[in-house]
Amino acid sequence: DIQMTQTPSSLSASVGDRVNISCRASQSIRSYLNWYQQKPGKAPKVLMYLASTLRGGVPPRFSGSGSGTDFTLTISSLQPDDFATYYCQESYSFSGTFGQGTRVEI
Amino acid sequence: EVQLVESGGGLVKPGGSLRLSCAASGFSVSDAWMSWVRQVPGKGLERVGHIKSKSDGGTTQFAAPVEGRFTISRDESKNTLFLQMNSLKTEDTAVYYCTTYHIGVAGYDYYFYMDVWGKGTSVTVSS
Image (tube, rainbow over all chains, first blue to last red; front, top):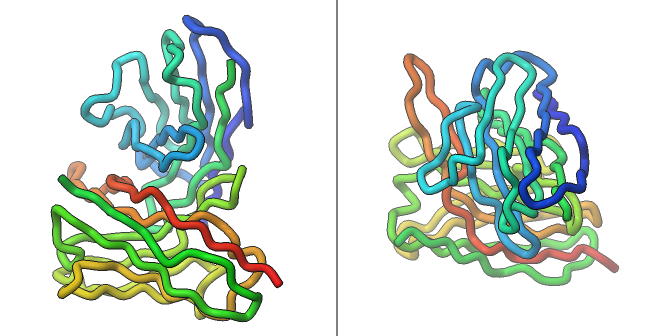
C-alpha cells in the first residue's frame, strides 16, 4: 500500500498568515492527490483533487501544488473559517490512503 | 439533493457483530461507487472498504485490517448501503462514515475523490 505522510502534524497560525501543509507519498502518485478539510464533529469535505484543481465553491485562497511524491496545500491568507484539520489522500489507487492529518490552530 | 444518513452504531463486545446502514437519497446506490471510512476519535481517517457500481461489476475491496471480517452490500429496494462487521476488535472502535466516490477522467486515466459524506455513526467495541 502507498503510505502518505503529512507535515507538520499541527501548526499555530494567525488570521492573515500564509500556511503551507506538506504531504509526501511513499511512491510516485503522479498528480493523483486529494485534499480534505475537517472541522470538529463534522465529516470531511473535499477541497481539491488532482493535486491542484479546486472543487467548485472552494475559495481561491486555497491552492495546491506538486506531483510525483511531494505535494503542498497552501492557504494564502488564513481566515477564521479555515481553522480545521486537513488531510491529503492519494487517489492513485482505490485504496485511497489518507495522510495522518494536519491540525491548523489559532 | 444527494444525502447519506448512517445508522446502526452502538456498543458491542469484542468478537461480536454489528451491521451499519447508510440510507441514500438523491441518487441510486446501485449506480455509485461507495465506501466506508472510519475515524478513531481524535485520530485520522482510514478507508475501510468500497463497493463498485453495479455497472462496474459491484465488487468490493477492503483494507487489510478488516479483510475477511467486514463485508459491504446494498439493498436497491431500500436504496441503502450496508457494512456488516463481524469478529469485532477493540481497535475497530471509531466513527464510521459512508461516502460516495466522484470518479472523473483525466486524460487517459481515472481519478476519484470522496464526494458526499454522511454525518457518521459511532461504534464502540468494549467488554
